[in-house]
Image 1 (cartoon, rainbow, N blue to C red):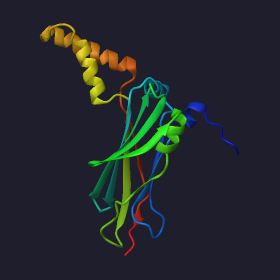
Image 2 (cartoon, rainbow, N blue to C red):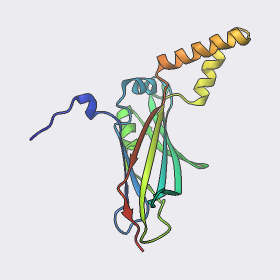
Image 3 (tube, helix red, strand yellow):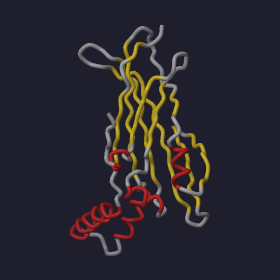
Image 4 (cartoon, rainbow, N blue to C red):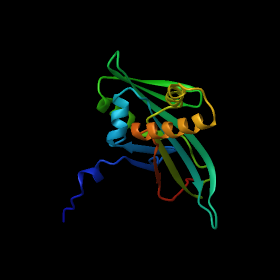
Amino acid sequence: MVLAFPLAAQRRPALDVAPSAAGAAGAVVNATNLFAEQDIRDLVRSGFPASLRFRLELWRAGGLFDDLEGRLDWDLIVQYDPTAQRYRVVRRQADQHEDLGSFSTLSTAQTVLERPSRATLSPERGGVRYYYAVALDIEALSVSDLDQLERWLRGAKSGTAASAVGNGVRTLMLRMLGGEKRHYTARSAVFVAEK
């Protein structure tokens, strides 16, 4: 039996996490269709940077409560440079930045962003049950973009009434630009760590 799903359902961003293959430590995180949503794709093509924030957690499966054993965060950033007509992709983790390249199309940049990420977050105890949880936040407007928008909105002198109106206009502008965050989560199956 063949099941057909609407095209929109097939093109939603997807997130997956699994323990690395036997003999390798850590986990593998896969994210696909990252720019499937038209509004985010349009913002990136218009020059707004997109930040993809990953948070990987390792949980020890317990009786009544599970215990967080470790956490790893990293960002992937893509931004279009209209002068060069290129998409730059950067990976940021802790204080380190890695330039992943410059690409002529968003599709090519997306291919690099969607490569599986291997994380070295490994269980401390052998013979114990664990699972990984991953969260991804995709945001098409950075803090500096919000600051620029606020400076533009502050054309009039600020006061309580002007500030309330400014906040309302700011929220409206952000919604019109599609700058709201998208949040995705996934969890691996429970596994027993090797001794």
